[in-house]
Image 1: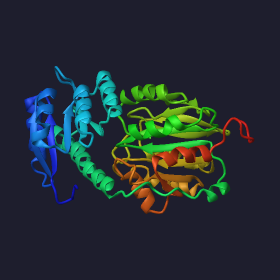
Image 2: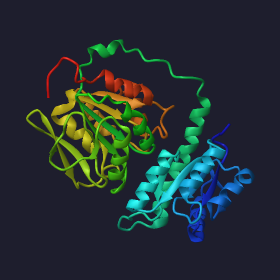
Image 3: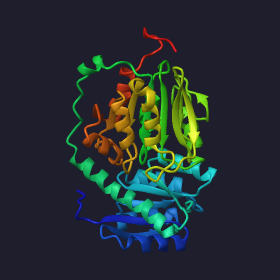
Image 4: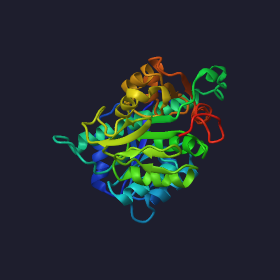
Length: 361
């Protein structure tokens, strides 16, 4: 059983010797992380698994021979408990491979050559990107080993007094692709609500992610466009590097994309979306905070709650990283803290369908 006292056993798999050494230099300074070995190819990594017994692997997605996707799938077949964080390039091909890896069991991805802010170093950026994800994996292990069974079913008796909502605003970060792949396909095709999502992702990635989701959802999924009217029965994702805001045109929500300063070090930011919805549309909103690092969405949720929104936070047991939802839950802002499967059900309970009696579009 993993313990906070045990070092995280980590393996680095990358065909670039310089990048392997760079990561080793970064990670050797961390007292709770032990690099137990490295490999330059996928085949080499697979042959070393039994001897090295890694708990977590940082895996390059772009490798000759057995590429990262094939290596990832082979690792998961040999030992599904091993966590994998992939490194990818900032490109359309990199986005496709990263999203494919996430759907194949990878926990998360990091940019191998990220776009650096002024004055930022590659070592500093990689440290802030990779180390929190490694530690989040250990917390995930501890949560899983402490689970004793399925969470109890929630009491829905109070939902009858909650009015139907026609705006579903979702904020999510690390672990989000898997969470959204669980929740969104369960939304019924006749739902009379608009779904707005801020997923922390780089540009290029969000468009590809929307296309992937469309293939598995019963509703269309698209990147939001500037100044378009938000329609019921459509899932909108904030484009990478743009804040998504909602403004009213009469009773119709209009989507706005802005290049305002990053908030919580991210753009798009959940706080920006939630704050804009609270200004006039709060009573129509179901606000949902899913898995993710940091506190983005916490301040925005306070605005939504004060404006009359119904707030749901993902529980710790089903979160890859219980950061964003934890801030909301522990502050007492959530009307419901529950698992992903229950969130899908709540969306159905708290929104109207095409067959329901009620106000039209």
